[in-house]
Structure formats: C-alpha cells, structure tokens
Image (cartoon, rainbow, N blue to C red; front, side):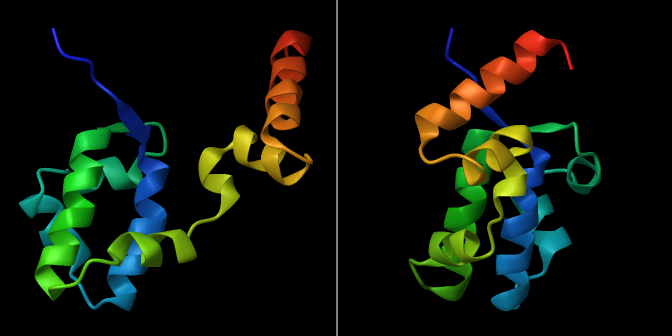
Length: 109
C-alpha cells in the first residue's frame, strides 16, 4: 500500500493567482491535471499532493519555464494554513506556533 498525502483545497488560491499572472486558464488547466473545479470551491475538500505537484509542473511546461512555484510563493498568505498560519504569524518561531495550536486544541475551543 502506498502512502496518500493531501492538501486542503485552499492551496489552490495562491496557485490560481499565480496562474492569472502567467495568463494560464485556471479551469482548463485543472481539468487537464485531473483536479475538479468543485474542489476549489469547497474549502474543506482535500486534493492529492501529487496532483498539486503535477499542476505546478504542468504550468511550468505550458510556459516553458521553471519558476512557477516562485510565483505561487509570492501569492501565498499564511491564512492558507488556517489556524496554523495565524499561529505562525503571532509566534517568534515554528515551535512556538505549534505550542499555540496545542494550547488551543487542549482548551476545547
């Protein structure tokens, strides 16, 4: 059995912004990469990490470049990681961010 890794569909937000910058059609590219557009609209859906990686490579291939991931990073916001992202913004380091999340989870909020 192989491991399955997934990401929240929120990861598609900075990817869509990057695709807009690169003049790549979002809907047709998702379809070409086997990702449903309905996944983009559902904040709770999960997408295979492998598919997301393939999508990034596909965008590089479309424009014959190798830096699409940099454009994605430039369009990234910590809120994409939900509570962890905001915990990171409020913390001095990643360890402190995880401790914040741990305290939050223990409080039952």
